[in-house]
Length: 228
Image (tube, rainbow, N blue to C red; front, side):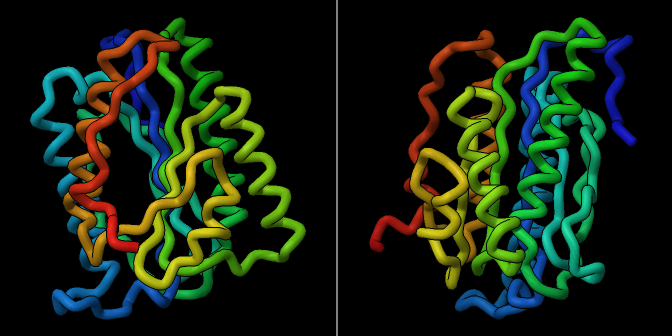
């Protein structure tokens, strides 16, 4: 169920769906002494705080979260579309494998539903974002993965979505890169806080733009492994 109120907030929206790998391997401990899932949860909490501090983004950015793996070992909508003002970070739990292709398909469907909601409510919107974060590679049936990757690439080529693929240590970047036009980027260690601060800043910039504008995003070097 969405947590969106168009009746009292008719502002343009910038939607972003997070596709988050919460498979068992996210329990791996990094050099900082934290597990990957601990660092990811801290990053999502940072995203909440950062959006709340932005007077424009808090009323214009919308988020949804799709988990991949986890206790149910499936791709699930953990949070339907929620305006930033109502977004509250919650702990993600790990387990299972990485049905990433299914997660991407679920996310693409969420994006189409968001657009339909916008049209029905007479709300303008900028191009939706889909950020995919994984520390491995998909465990889907090969045909499902191939189909999901094609759907994602075609949606981006048709300007229906902007795709960002982020690998965590151990991720197969070449496989992740099949999902979009841009190469998948590797996170530097467990710099999830830096990544989500960058995301907050970027979504804020997008929320201030007009549909179709070209965005100049901040440098990814603050969170990206540039030594690869």
